[in-house]
Amino acid sequence: MKVQGDSVTGSTKLVTDKATIRATSDPGNSFIDNMITLIGTATRQRTPNEVALAVLLSGLTLVFLIISAVIFPMARILGITINIIMLLVLLIALMPTTIGALLPAIGVSAINKISEFNIIAKSGRAVENAGDIDTIILDKTGTVTIGEREAVKFYPNTGVDYNDFVRMCAISSLEDMTKEGISIVNLAKKEGVSITAGDLGEHEFIPFSAETKFSGVKIGNSEILKGSLKSLKAKFSLGDTFIEALCKEISMRGGTAIPVVQNGKFTGVIELNDLLKPGVKERLESIKSMNIKTIMCTGDDEVTAEFIAREAGIDEFVANVTPMDKYNVVIGEKEKQLMVAMVGDGTNDAPALANADVGLAMNNGTPAAKEAANMVDLDNDPTKLLDIIFIGKQILITRGALTAFSIANDISKYFVIIPAIFFIFPSLDYLNILGLSNPLLAITSALIFNTAIIVVLIPLAIRGVRFVPSGISDLLKRNLLLYGLGGVIVPFIFIKLIYVLLSVAGVVW
Figure 1 (cartoon, helix red, strand yellow):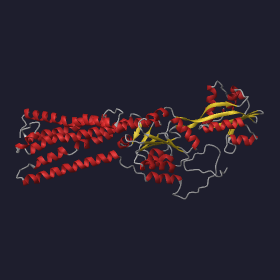
Figure 2: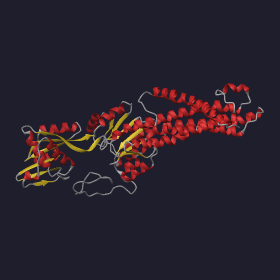
Figure 3: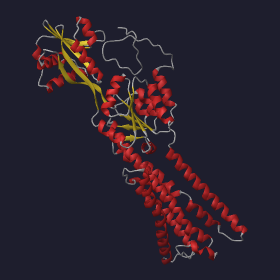
Figure 4: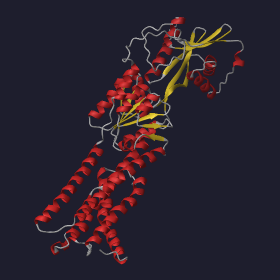
Protein backbone atom coordinates (compact mmCIF):
# COMPACT_ATOMS: atom_id res chain seq x y z
CA MET A 1 0.00 0.00 0.00
CA LYS A 2 1.26 3.48 -0.79
CA VAL A 3 0.26 6.23 1.63
CA GLN A 4 -0.63 9.43 -0.19
CA GLY A 5 -0.12 12.77 1.56
CA ASP A 6 1.42 11.33 4.71
CA SER A 7 5.03 11.57 5.76
CA VAL A 8 7.35 9.44 7.85
CA THR A 9 10.63 10.15 9.59
CA GLY A 10 13.59 8.05 10.58
CA SER A 11 12.01 7.47 14.01
CA THR A 12 8.55 6.41 12.76
CA LYS A 13 7.46 2.91 13.75
CA LEU A 14 4.88 1.15 11.57
CA VAL A 15 2.64 -1.09 13.70
CA THR A 16 0.00 -2.20 11.16
CA ASP A 17 -0.22 -2.84 7.43
CA LYS A 18 2.64 -1.85 5.14
CA ALA A 19 3.74 1.34 3.47
CA THR A 20 5.72 2.27 0.40
CA ILE A 21 8.08 5.10 1.24
CA ARG A 22 9.91 7.43 -1.10
CA ALA A 23 12.93 9.31 0.29
CA THR A 24 12.57 13.01 -0.45
CA SER A 25 15.37 14.49 1.69
CA ASP A 26 18.87 14.86 0.36
CA PRO A 27 21.67 13.22 2.35
CA GLY A 28 22.52 15.45 5.29
CA ASN A 29 19.14 17.22 5.24
CA SER A 30 16.90 14.52 6.71
CA PHE A 31 14.98 14.80 9.99
CA ILE A 32 17.60 12.81 11.88
CA ASP A 33 20.44 14.87 10.33
CA ASN A 34 18.74 18.08 11.44
CA MET A 35 18.29 16.70 14.96
CA ILE A 36 21.98 15.79 15.12
CA THR A 37 22.96 19.30 13.95
CA LEU A 38 20.77 21.01 16.55
CA ILE A 39 22.10 18.78 19.33
CA GLY A 40 25.72 19.05 18.19
CA THR A 41 25.68 22.85 18.11
CA ALA A 42 23.95 23.19 21.48
CA THR A 43 25.84 24.96 24.26
CA ARG A 44 24.76 25.38 27.86
CA GLN A 45 25.86 28.81 29.03
CA ARG A 46 27.00 29.49 32.57
CA THR A 47 24.26 30.54 34.97
CA PRO A 48 24.15 34.02 36.58
CA ASN A 49 25.16 32.45 39.90
CA GLU A 50 28.18 30.78 38.32
CA VAL A 51 29.23 34.02 36.63
CA ALA A 52 28.77 36.02 39.86
CA LEU A 53 30.82 33.54 41.90
CA ALA A 54 33.59 33.46 39.28
CA VAL A 55 33.74 37.28 39.20
CA LEU A 56 33.78 37.44 43.01
CA LEU A 57 36.58 34.89 43.40
CA SER A 58 38.60 36.44 40.58
CA GLY A 59 38.14 39.91 42.08
CA LEU A 60 39.21 38.79 45.55
CA THR A 61 42.24 37.02 44.12
CA LEU A 62 43.25 40.15 42.19
CA VAL A 63 42.79 42.38 45.26
CA PHE A 64 44.89 40.09 47.47
CA LEU A 65 47.61 39.86 44.83
CA ILE A 66 47.77 43.66 44.58
CA ILE A 67 47.83 44.04 48.38
CA SER A 68 50.60 41.48 48.77
CA ALA A 69 52.60 42.99 45.91
CA VAL A 70 52.30 46.58 47.21
CA ILE A 71 53.29 45.85 50.84
CA PHE A 72 56.90 44.89 50.03
CA PRO A 73 57.91 48.00 47.99
CA MET A 74 56.03 50.27 50.40
CA ALA A 75 57.97 48.76 53.30
CA ARG A 76 61.26 49.37 51.44
CA ILE A 77 60.30 53.00 50.89
CA LEU A 78 59.53 53.38 54.60
CA GLY A 79 62.76 51.65 55.53
CA ILE A 80 61.04 48.63 57.02
CA THR A 81 62.48 45.17 56.63
CA ILE A 82 59.81 42.57 55.87
CA ASN A 83 60.43 38.87 55.57
CA ILE A 84 59.34 37.78 52.08
CA ILE A 85 58.11 34.50 53.57
CA MET A 86 55.57 36.44 55.61
CA LEU A 87 54.22 38.04 52.47
CA LEU A 88 53.82 34.62 50.87
CA VAL A 89 52.03 33.41 53.99
CA LEU A 90 49.75 36.45 53.81
CA LEU A 91 48.90 35.69 50.17
CA ILE A 92 48.23 32.01 50.89
CA ALA A 93 46.05 32.77 53.89
CA LEU A 94 43.99 35.49 52.23
CA MET A 95 43.44 33.85 48.84
CA PRO A 96 39.92 32.32 48.58
CA THR A 97 41.32 28.82 48.93
CA THR A 98 38.60 27.65 51.32
CA ILE A 99 35.66 28.02 48.94
CA GLY A 100 37.87 27.00 46.01
CA ALA A 101 38.68 23.72 47.73
CA LEU A 102 35.05 23.10 48.75
CA LEU A 103 33.41 23.69 45.35
CA PRO A 104 34.40 20.23 43.98
CA ALA A 105 32.97 18.62 47.14
CA ILE A 106 29.70 20.50 46.60
CA GLY A 107 29.57 19.23 43.01
CA VAL A 108 30.14 15.62 44.09
CA SER A 109 27.47 16.06 46.77
CA ALA A 110 24.98 17.25 44.13
CA ILE A 111 25.48 14.11 42.03
CA ASN A 112 25.22 11.84 45.09
CA LYS A 113 22.05 13.49 46.37
CA ILE A 114 20.31 13.27 43.02
CA SER A 115 21.22 9.58 42.67
CA GLU A 116 19.16 8.86 45.80
CA PHE A 117 16.11 9.68 43.68
CA ASN A 118 17.20 7.18 41.01
CA ILE A 119 18.31 9.96 38.70
CA ILE A 120 21.63 9.99 36.87
CA ALA A 121 23.16 13.48 36.70
CA LYS A 122 25.97 13.93 34.20
CA SER A 123 27.46 16.80 36.22
CA GLY A 124 27.04 18.58 39.53
CA ARG A 125 26.50 21.77 37.57
CA ALA A 126 23.27 20.36 36.15
CA VAL A 127 21.87 19.93 39.67
CA GLU A 128 23.00 23.40 40.73
CA ASN A 129 21.26 24.88 37.68
CA ALA A 130 17.98 23.35 38.86
CA GLY A 131 18.00 25.62 41.89
CA ASP A 132 17.67 28.69 39.63
CA ILE A 133 14.94 27.40 37.30
CA ASP A 134 12.32 29.97 36.21
CA THR A 135 10.50 28.00 33.50
CA ILE A 136 9.78 24.29 33.05
CA ILE A 137 8.90 23.01 29.57
CA LEU A 138 7.22 19.62 29.43
CA ASP A 139 6.52 17.33 26.53
CA LYS A 140 2.97 15.97 26.75
CA THR A 141 3.04 12.39 25.53
CA GLY A 142 5.00 10.12 27.83
CA THR A 143 5.86 12.99 30.18
CA VAL A 144 2.66 14.67 31.39
CA THR A 145 0.48 11.82 30.15
CA ILE A 146 1.09 8.07 30.16
CA GLY A 147 1.43 8.15 26.38
CA GLU A 148 -0.95 5.23 25.69
CA ARG A 149 -4.67 5.65 25.15
CA GLU A 150 -6.85 3.68 27.54
CA ALA A 151 -10.59 3.04 27.61
CA VAL A 152 -12.19 5.07 30.39
CA LYS A 153 -15.94 4.92 29.77
CA PHE A 154 -18.71 3.23 27.75
CA TYR A 155 -21.61 5.27 26.32
CA PRO A 156 -24.52 3.14 25.01
CA ASN A 157 -26.80 4.60 22.33
CA THR A 158 -30.39 5.51 23.06
CA GLY A 159 -32.40 2.35 23.63
CA VAL A 160 -29.34 0.08 24.08
CA ASP A 161 -28.88 -1.69 27.43
CA TYR A 162 -25.64 -0.70 29.16
CA ASN A 163 -24.50 -4.27 29.94
CA ASP A 164 -25.35 -5.40 26.40
CA PHE A 165 -23.23 -2.58 25.00
CA VAL A 166 -20.29 -3.36 27.31
CA ARG A 167 -20.51 -6.98 26.14
CA MET A 168 -20.38 -5.85 22.46
CA CYS A 169 -17.28 -3.76 23.20
CA ALA A 170 -15.54 -6.67 24.92
CA ILE A 171 -16.42 -9.09 22.08
CA SER A 172 -15.16 -6.71 19.38
CA SER A 173 -11.87 -6.23 21.25
CA LEU A 174 -11.24 -9.75 22.54
CA GLU A 175 -8.59 -10.56 19.93
CA ASP A 176 -7.46 -6.97 19.43
CA MET A 177 -3.91 -7.07 20.83
CA THR A 178 -3.34 -3.32 20.63
CA LYS A 179 -3.05 -1.47 23.95
CA GLU A 180 -6.38 0.21 23.23
CA GLY A 181 -8.07 -3.14 22.59
CA ILE A 182 -6.63 -4.70 25.75
CA SER A 183 -7.76 -1.68 27.80
CA ILE A 184 -11.33 -2.04 26.48
CA VAL A 185 -11.45 -5.70 27.59
CA ASN A 186 -10.00 -4.77 30.99
CA LEU A 187 -12.53 -1.96 31.48
CA ALA A 188 -15.35 -4.36 30.57
CA LYS A 189 -14.09 -6.76 33.28
CA LYS A 190 -14.23 -3.92 35.81
CA GLU A 191 -17.83 -3.38 34.75
CA GLY A 192 -18.59 -7.05 35.46
CA VAL A 193 -18.47 -8.34 31.88
CA SER A 194 -15.87 -11.06 31.24
CA ILE A 195 -15.67 -12.69 27.79
CA THR A 196 -13.49 -15.57 26.59
CA ALA A 197 -12.94 -16.96 23.09
CA GLY A 198 -14.93 -20.06 24.11
CA ASP A 199 -17.97 -17.88 24.72
CA LEU A 200 -17.97 -16.75 21.09
CA GLY A 201 -17.94 -20.15 19.44
CA GLU A 202 -16.98 -20.11 15.78
CA HIS A 203 -16.00 -16.55 14.84
CA GLU A 204 -13.76 -14.49 12.58
CA PHE A 205 -11.61 -11.63 13.87
CA ILE A 206 -11.49 -8.56 11.62
CA PRO A 207 -8.13 -6.82 12.20
CA PHE A 208 -7.61 -3.06 12.02
CA SER A 209 -6.07 -1.69 8.82
CA ALA A 210 -5.06 1.76 7.62
CA GLU A 211 -7.56 1.44 4.76
CA THR A 212 -10.66 0.44 6.74
CA LYS A 213 -9.81 2.19 10.03
CA PHE A 214 -11.91 -0.24 12.03
CA SER A 215 -11.64 -3.70 13.60
CA GLY A 216 -14.07 -6.19 15.12
CA VAL A 217 -15.44 -9.68 14.99
CA LYS A 218 -17.90 -11.65 12.85
CA ILE A 219 -19.99 -14.39 14.52
CA GLY A 220 -22.24 -16.16 12.07
CA ASN A 221 -24.41 -13.50 10.44
CA SER A 222 -23.70 -10.99 13.20
CA GLU A 223 -20.91 -8.42 12.90
CA ILE A 224 -19.60 -6.03 15.56
CA LEU A 225 -17.15 -3.34 14.48
CA LYS A 226 -15.42 -0.45 16.25
CA GLY A 227 -13.34 2.31 14.65
CA SER A 228 -13.37 5.85 13.37
CA LEU A 229 -16.72 7.62 13.00
CA LYS A 230 -15.96 8.67 9.43
CA SER A 231 -15.05 5.16 8.22
CA LEU A 232 -18.04 3.48 9.86
CA LYS A 233 -20.45 6.12 8.51
CA ALA A 234 -19.02 5.59 5.03
CA LYS A 235 -19.20 1.78 5.22
CA PHE A 236 -22.81 1.58 6.38
CA SER A 237 -24.11 4.95 5.10
CA LEU A 238 -25.12 5.74 8.65
CA GLY A 239 -26.19 8.98 10.24
CA ASP A 240 -26.85 9.34 13.97
CA THR A 241 -26.98 12.82 15.51
CA PHE A 242 -26.65 11.49 19.09
CA ILE A 243 -23.50 9.48 18.30
CA GLU A 244 -21.97 12.31 16.25
CA ALA A 245 -22.62 14.85 19.03
CA LEU A 246 -21.19 12.45 21.62
CA CYS A 247 -18.03 11.91 19.56
CA LYS A 248 -17.58 15.67 19.19
CA GLU A 249 -18.07 16.21 22.94
CA ILE A 250 -15.43 13.57 23.78
CA SER A 251 -12.99 15.15 21.33
CA MET A 252 -13.62 18.61 22.82
CA ARG A 253 -12.42 17.41 26.23
CA GLY A 254 -9.29 15.82 24.81
CA GLY A 255 -10.44 12.22 24.47
CA THR A 256 -10.69 9.82 21.54
CA ALA A 257 -14.15 8.57 20.54
CA ILE A 258 -14.49 5.00 19.18
CA PRO A 259 -18.03 4.33 17.88
CA VAL A 260 -19.32 0.73 17.88
CA VAL A 261 -21.60 -0.70 15.19
CA GLN A 262 -23.57 -3.97 15.36
CA ASN A 263 -25.15 -5.22 12.19
CA GLY A 264 -25.09 -1.79 10.54
CA LYS A 265 -26.40 0.22 13.52
CA PHE A 266 -24.59 2.45 15.99
CA THR A 267 -24.85 0.91 19.46
CA GLY A 268 -22.69 3.40 21.36
CA VAL A 269 -19.27 4.97 21.83
CA ILE A 270 -16.11 4.00 23.74
CA GLU A 271 -14.10 6.88 25.19
CA LEU A 272 -10.30 6.57 25.19
CA ASN A 273 -8.04 8.98 27.01
CA ASP A 274 -4.31 9.51 27.25
CA LEU A 275 -4.34 9.68 31.05
CA LEU A 276 -2.25 11.99 33.20
CA LYS A 277 0.66 10.27 34.91
CA PRO A 278 -0.08 9.62 38.61
CA GLY A 279 0.93 12.52 40.83
CA VAL A 280 1.67 14.94 37.98
CA LYS A 281 -1.06 17.44 38.84
CA GLU A 282 -0.17 17.63 42.55
CA ARG A 283 3.55 18.05 41.89
CA LEU A 284 2.95 20.73 39.26
CA GLU A 285 0.91 22.68 41.80
CA SER A 286 3.91 22.56 44.15
CA ILE A 287 6.17 23.82 41.36
CA LYS A 288 3.80 26.72 40.62
CA SER A 289 3.83 27.68 44.32
CA MET A 290 7.56 28.37 43.87
CA ASN A 291 6.73 30.94 41.12
CA ILE A 292 8.04 28.65 38.39
CA LYS A 293 6.18 28.88 35.07
CA THR A 294 5.14 25.63 33.33
CA ILE A 295 4.74 25.24 29.55
CA MET A 296 3.50 22.09 27.78
CA CYS A 297 4.55 21.34 24.19
CA THR A 298 2.58 18.82 22.16
CA GLY A 299 1.98 17.77 18.59
CA ASP A 300 -1.74 17.44 19.36
CA ASP A 301 -4.30 19.99 18.21
CA GLU A 302 -5.38 23.04 20.21
CA VAL A 303 -8.46 21.37 21.70
CA THR A 304 -6.60 18.35 23.10
CA ALA A 305 -3.65 20.46 24.26
CA GLU A 306 -5.94 22.92 26.08
CA PHE A 307 -7.81 20.09 27.84
CA ILE A 308 -4.64 18.31 29.04
CA ALA A 309 -3.04 21.60 30.14
CA ARG A 310 -6.16 22.52 32.11
CA GLU A 311 -6.40 19.07 33.72
CA ALA A 312 -2.73 19.07 34.72
CA GLY A 313 -2.74 22.69 35.91
CA ILE A 314 -0.13 23.85 33.40
CA ASP A 315 0.22 27.61 32.84
CA GLU A 316 0.75 27.67 29.07
CA PHE A 317 0.68 25.23 26.17
CA VAL A 318 1.97 25.18 22.61
CA ALA A 319 0.03 22.89 20.23
CA ASN A 320 0.89 21.38 16.83
CA VAL A 321 4.61 21.69 17.59
CA THR A 322 7.47 20.34 15.53
CA PRO A 323 10.92 19.49 16.99
CA MET A 324 12.10 22.92 15.84
CA ASP A 325 9.15 24.56 17.65
CA LYS A 326 10.16 22.93 20.95
CA TYR A 327 13.71 24.10 20.39
CA ASN A 328 12.45 27.64 19.70
CA VAL A 329 10.34 27.64 22.89
CA VAL A 330 13.46 26.84 24.93
CA ILE A 331 15.52 29.50 23.15
CA GLY A 332 12.70 32.04 23.47
CA GLU A 333 12.53 31.60 27.25
CA LYS A 334 16.32 31.80 27.57
CA GLU A 335 16.36 35.04 25.57
CA LYS A 336 14.18 36.49 28.35
CA GLN A 337 17.14 35.84 30.69
CA LEU A 338 15.26 32.97 32.31
CA MET A 339 16.66 29.65 33.48
CA VAL A 340 14.89 26.85 31.60
CA ALA A 341 14.30 23.17 32.38
CA MET A 342 13.04 20.76 29.71
CA VAL A 343 11.51 17.33 30.32
CA GLY A 344 11.12 14.93 27.39
CA ASP A 345 11.59 11.41 26.13
CA GLY A 346 11.56 11.44 22.33
CA THR A 347 14.02 12.05 19.52
CA ASN A 348 12.09 15.21 18.63
CA ASP A 349 12.73 16.49 22.17
CA ALA A 350 16.52 16.08 21.88
CA PRO A 351 17.37 19.58 20.50
CA ALA A 352 15.33 21.26 23.24
CA LEU A 353 16.84 19.00 25.93
CA ALA A 354 20.35 19.81 24.72
CA ASN A 355 19.80 23.58 24.89
CA ALA A 356 17.91 23.76 28.19
CA ASP A 357 19.85 24.62 31.34
CA VAL A 358 18.42 21.45 32.86
CA GLY A 359 17.44 18.67 30.47
CA LEU A 360 15.69 15.70 32.13
CA ALA A 361 15.12 12.67 29.89
CA MET A 362 13.06 9.61 30.75
CA ASN A 363 14.89 6.26 30.87
CA ASN A 364 12.29 4.71 28.55
CA GLY A 365 12.95 7.49 26.05
CA THR A 366 15.02 7.34 22.88
CA PRO A 367 18.84 7.20 22.95
CA ALA A 368 18.95 10.65 21.32
CA ALA A 369 16.93 12.20 24.16
CA LYS A 370 19.06 10.57 26.86
CA GLU A 371 22.26 11.64 25.14
CA ALA A 372 21.11 15.26 24.77
CA ALA A 373 19.88 15.66 28.37
CA ASN A 374 22.16 16.29 31.33
CA MET A 375 19.97 14.14 33.61
CA VAL A 376 18.21 10.81 33.09
CA ASP A 377 15.35 9.60 35.32
CA LEU A 378 15.54 5.82 35.67
CA ASP A 379 11.93 5.67 36.97
CA ASN A 380 10.39 7.68 34.11
CA ASP A 381 8.68 10.08 36.53
CA PRO A 382 8.67 13.72 35.33
CA THR A 383 7.33 14.90 38.70
CA LYS A 384 10.79 14.24 40.15
CA LEU A 385 11.77 17.58 38.69
CA LEU A 386 10.39 19.13 41.88
CA ASP A 387 12.82 17.04 43.95
CA ILE A 388 15.64 18.10 41.63
CA ILE A 389 14.71 21.77 42.12
CA PHE A 390 14.74 21.39 45.91
CA ILE A 391 18.16 19.71 45.80
CA GLY A 392 19.42 22.39 43.42
CA LYS A 393 18.30 25.12 45.80
CA GLN A 394 19.98 23.33 48.70
CA ILE A 395 23.21 23.11 46.72
CA LEU A 396 23.06 26.84 45.87
CA ILE A 397 22.38 27.75 49.50
CA THR A 398 25.27 25.53 50.61
CA ARG A 399 27.60 27.20 48.14
CA GLY A 400 26.43 30.66 49.22
CA ALA A 401 26.79 29.84 52.91
CA LEU A 402 30.31 28.47 52.50
CA THR A 403 31.29 31.43 50.30
CA ALA A 404 30.09 33.83 53.02
CA PHE A 405 32.03 31.87 55.64
CA SER A 406 35.16 31.82 53.46
CA ILE A 407 35.16 35.60 52.86
CA ALA A 408 34.42 36.35 56.54
CA ASN A 409 37.25 33.97 57.38
CA ASP A 410 39.70 36.17 55.50
CA ILE A 411 38.63 39.25 57.49
CA SER A 412 39.66 37.51 60.72
CA LYS A 413 43.00 36.46 59.31
CA TYR A 414 43.77 40.10 58.42
CA PHE A 415 43.75 40.88 62.16
CA VAL A 416 46.28 38.11 62.79
CA ILE A 417 48.75 38.39 59.91
CA ILE A 418 48.91 42.18 59.30
CA PRO A 419 49.87 42.95 62.95
CA ALA A 420 52.42 40.10 62.76
CA ILE A 421 54.07 41.61 59.67
CA PHE A 422 54.19 45.13 61.15
CA PHE A 423 54.84 44.09 64.75
CA ILE A 424 57.61 46.71 65.06
CA PHE A 425 55.00 49.49 64.94
CA PRO A 426 53.42 49.91 68.39
CA SER A 427 50.78 52.13 66.81
CA LEU A 428 49.30 49.04 65.10
CA ASP A 429 48.84 47.15 68.35
CA TYR A 430 45.13 48.00 68.32
CA LEU A 431 44.82 45.61 65.34
CA ASN A 432 46.30 42.78 67.37
CA ILE A 433 42.91 41.86 68.86
CA LEU A 434 44.03 38.41 69.97
CA GLY A 435 47.17 39.70 71.72
CA LEU A 436 49.55 37.39 69.83
CA SER A 437 53.05 38.47 70.88
CA ASN A 438 55.09 36.08 68.73
CA PRO A 439 54.67 37.09 65.03
CA LEU A 440 55.94 33.83 63.50
CA LEU A 441 53.87 31.72 65.89
CA ALA A 442 50.81 33.84 65.07
CA ILE A 443 51.29 33.31 61.34
CA THR A 444 51.87 29.58 61.86
CA SER A 445 48.62 29.37 63.83
CA ALA A 446 46.75 31.14 61.01
CA LEU A 447 48.20 28.75 58.42
CA ILE A 448 47.27 25.68 60.48
CA PHE A 449 43.72 26.99 60.88
CA ASN A 450 43.55 27.84 57.16
CA THR A 451 44.35 24.21 56.29
CA ALA A 452 42.26 22.56 59.00
CA ILE A 453 39.07 24.51 58.29
CA ILE A 454 38.88 23.09 54.78
CA VAL A 455 38.97 19.52 56.13
CA VAL A 456 36.35 20.41 58.75
CA LEU A 457 33.98 21.98 56.22
CA ILE A 458 34.11 19.16 53.62
CA PRO A 459 31.46 17.05 55.49
CA LEU A 460 29.17 20.13 55.56
CA ALA A 461 29.74 20.70 51.84
CA ILE A 462 28.83 17.08 51.11
CA ARG A 463 25.85 16.94 53.49
CA GLY A 464 24.60 20.37 52.46
CA VAL A 465 23.04 23.23 54.38
CA ARG A 466 19.43 22.46 55.31
CA PHE A 467 17.00 24.12 52.88
CA VAL A 468 13.80 25.60 54.27
CA PRO A 469 11.55 27.13 51.56
CA SER A 470 11.44 30.86 52.31
CA GLY A 471 11.99 34.26 50.75
CA ILE A 472 15.33 35.40 49.35
CA SER A 473 15.70 38.09 52.02
CA ASP A 474 15.16 35.56 54.83
CA LEU A 475 17.74 33.20 53.35
CA LEU A 476 20.23 36.07 52.98
CA LYS A 477 19.76 37.15 56.61
CA ARG A 478 20.20 33.57 57.80
CA ASN A 479 23.39 33.07 55.78
CA LEU A 480 24.92 36.38 56.86
CA LEU A 481 24.09 35.83 60.53
CA LEU A 482 25.08 32.18 60.80
CA TYR A 483 27.90 31.83 58.27
CA GLY A 484 29.01 35.45 57.79
CA LEU A 485 29.25 36.38 61.47
CA GLY A 486 30.34 32.84 62.32
CA GLY A 487 33.10 33.11 59.73
CA VAL A 488 34.49 36.14 61.60
CA ILE A 489 34.24 34.75 65.14
CA VAL A 490 35.29 31.10 64.61
CA PRO A 491 38.80 31.91 63.23
CA PHE A 492 39.52 34.23 66.19
CA ILE A 493 38.66 31.47 68.66
CA PHE A 494 40.56 28.65 66.99
CA ILE A 495 43.63 30.66 65.90
CA LYS A 496 44.01 31.81 69.49
CA LEU A 497 43.55 28.21 70.68
CA ILE A 498 46.15 26.91 68.21
CA TYR A 499 48.55 29.71 69.25
CA VAL A 500 48.20 28.79 72.96
CA LEU A 501 48.68 25.06 72.23
CA LEU A 502 51.82 25.76 70.20
CA SER A 503 53.14 28.01 72.96
CA VAL A 504 52.46 25.37 75.65
CA ALA A 505 54.13 22.74 73.45
CA GLY A 506 57.22 24.93 73.43
CA VAL A 507 57.15 25.79 69.73
CA VAL A 508 59.10 29.06 69.64
CA TRP A 509 60.94 30.87 66.83
